[in-house]
Length: 158
Image 1 (cartoon, one colour):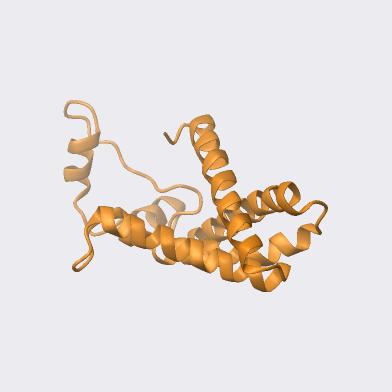
Image 2 (tube, one colour):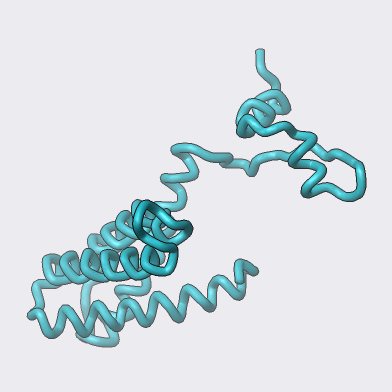
């Protein structure tokens, strides 16, 4: 039967622990690295997707209430997973060079694709004109950017 300590060892990548500990640990003492309570894999992916979907839904509802007036929050909940899925699936392009795309161009590709997917979902769910869709999408982008920077600073990610 596997213990919790052996499970943590199994979940580490195939990199010698001594090499990692010598890079991270203090002078000469090798400490055992542990993964978080969720670790990696499917649980982490689902957790990140749900958190990002909730974040996009909240920021869209704030933007829609400001832009359109009183709207049901369920509409934002229907739209939230769309930009979340696109940004998570294409996130690699903004983190490193992939194929012919440099990192900087990859960020632009992710941003434009996420905004287009967001606009298509907003137009479908809210049933508004193209001009209003463009305005709400840009306002949603602004709300998400400002709230994202604020949360990153509060939580110590930036």
